[in-house]
Amino acid sequence: MELFNIGILEFLFILILAFIVLGPKKAVKVAGEVGAWIRNILDSPTWKEIMKTSRDIRDIPRKITDDAEIQRTLEDIDYSIRGQDSALTEKESPQQGDASKEKENFKPSL
Image (cartoon, rainbow, N blue to C red; front, top):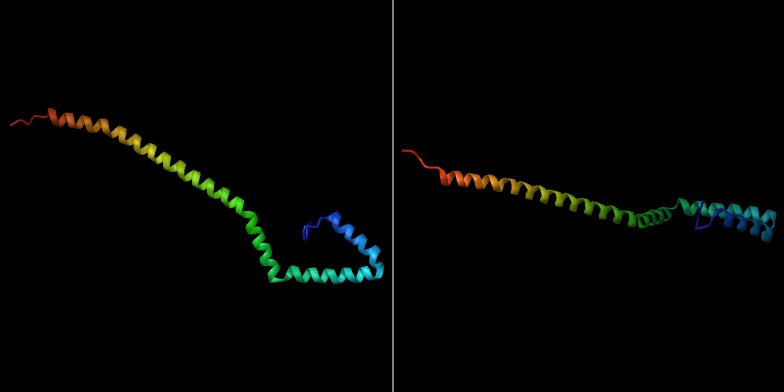
């Protein structure tokens, strides 16, 4: 659990320190007030927007990687298509050459 970038051990340390400084009765009262304050902050639309923006910023490297992977896939597909086109062109060329020879050797009979 991390809230405001404070881990469990740090949170326990703050509670113990507050208990020592404020005393048992006032520490409980202050803890309740702080809890209500934190709940109000976490329920506010501003906090939700901040958290959404934070998630979006953390997702930027993943999105860039995904886009790069898509680009690489498109380049691979384009390369494959060009390879198929060149293979088809090579196969058609000899056939067209044979047809030209047949036209040259063709003599119409009258």
